[in-house]
Length: 249
Image 1 (tube, rainbow, N blue to C red):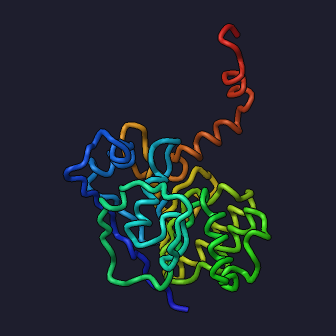
Image 2 (image 1 turned 120 degrees about the vertical axis):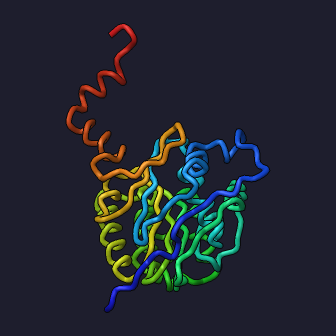
């Protein structure tokens, strides 16, 4: 099969005219960084957003998904349900600069609300596209893998928010293999993650968000989830001593 170029989304721009830059969500470091940078360049295959809790990477992924026409709670562009509206207004202020081709399919995976998506899949009776079995009858991790294995297809746009939340190490490795297979078939991924394993996708662009509003492209070894995990695993007792010792220790 011939490889097809990705790049359905080329970059993201922020239009925050008339908004309060000191208010949520515009005060989040990720949004401040986007404002400072002018635009967020996306890799035609895989872009990772990494950063500490509170930097706004999940809010940014959600806003990109909303601006691209996906349901805020997750699902495909054909999903239209709401359990509890919690999305920010950021999606209304993003401009997505698109490539020449349109994706044939797509999906927004939001880990925290995937239960609601699985319920909607049952209601619509479309389990056949997700492995032929109710995702509620699978473990959380198995349901994620069923989604990636059976529902994700070639030439698709996939926006994933912390997919590792339900996955074992083996599950993360299986997702890497599937991402590689799909990008070779023209798909594009934008992923917010804390997982040092997922970041190992070959050739991926890793954008690191910091609390000061910086957005920096880094290599795998420099990515914070990778460097901190390596440092901890090298000397766990040293970290635990500092974390668990009292102030007088």
